[in-house]
Image (tube, rainbow, N blue to C red; front, side, top):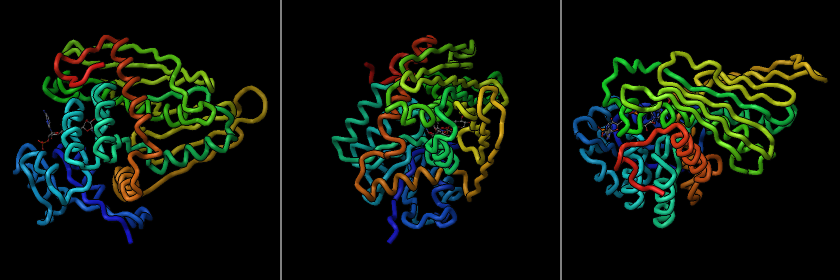
Length: 366
Ligand SMILES: NC(=O)C1=CN([C@@H]2O[C@H](COP(=O)(O)OP(=O)(O)OC[C@H]3O[C@@H](n4cnc5c(N)ncnc54)[C@H](OP(=O)(O)O)[C@@H]3O)[C@@H](O)[C@H]2O)C=CC1
Ligand SMILES: O=C1OC[C@@H](O)[C@H](O)[C@H]1O
């Protein structure tokens, strides 16, 4: 019998719409038979928006409840788990309210504004006995799982350098300064919005490498260029050293560059993995194997392509359903420690780059 997970959706923005549409894709289309997702409630700051959302993203299903507050979703006994898709700096408060109502949590990236907020959420989740996961969807996609299998085989030798970038042209000069990508009160800028993706590739290829023995980076080095428009980070680069391997990640994110070249390169002793863009949901990758001796001559190339119905956010939802079914408090693939590592890196990047969020935005400070 498949486990049916009953979801409440918090907010009606762009990503909540994409997630909900994926949630309602028949799991059998991706060969999943043990879990099923049901949307039972949508919470918005406006009942009308919740109703429009249900019409657009849940096929107008009359049984889905439209609430004009988030609190009503938390209080609904038919909701098992909530998906929270509000702007970054609201994640802490929204998740805390849901945890206190004993709901399991899938919280959009970045988990919180800083490490202290995340620690507080994790301790609340523990106290109330609920599952908690950051919605790091890339970690659960078929491409990522297949790449980790390639690395595990060790035919490429040890990883040496990971280069990863995620950039987009948000047309910042024509964007209202209140847009979440520009507004510092909403955690605007590149690092908190785009940074999770270059970082997740470094975490998968280097932090998770058996050679690393789950050792945190020994060094984090960062540089930020802030836009004079609002002071948020527009161009950010950061490097992480994993001394146990030893290997390095060279990562970047920009909000005013149109392309996302070079995507992700995982450069190993005996070859390279080239991950297609967009790096948050790539559909293919190529592995180039080098011949014996120095010189990096490619002697064999393998390409893998993937296809599925939907955008790829349902894989993380399947993980949530399985973990809750099995009584787990966290995922083994994207557990609490990895979200904490992410927030520690972002705290350090913002510190070195001098990007301070406005007073009162961070609800918990170290
Ligand atoms: N996994 C992924 O691929 C992606 C993840 N994200 C993450 O999702 C989150 C939301 O991003 P996105 O959907 O693009 O944002 P949007 O601005 O499109 O939507 C955010 C929603 O949050 C609610 N909200 C609550 N408080 C506020 C507030 N003060 N200002 C604005 N909105 C508010 C609103 O819903 P309502 O009015 O119904 O309450 C709004 O529609 C971010 O943290 C981002 O990092 C974003 C894009 C892609
Ligand atoms: O998570 C995301 O992925 C895609 C980006 O365009 C978006 O801004 C970001 O939030």
